[in-house]
Image (cartoon, rainbow, N blue to C red; front, side, top):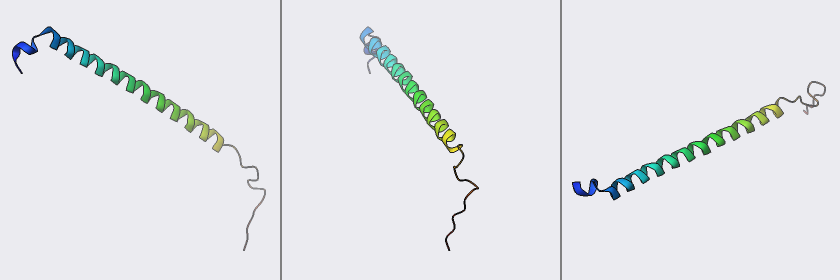
Length: 66
């Protein structure tokens, strides 16, 4: 690439805009990943809470067939 092209204000503007766009995209992806992880944690907590509930016939009935 020619040195005069690299020093041009238009090239520097395009480069700056490209970097800013990448930073914005990265921030958006981090926010989406954080929300997804939080949703997974909330879903896991809900499953753990329902799994901790006692079984209605636990220990009182035994069903065996031979």
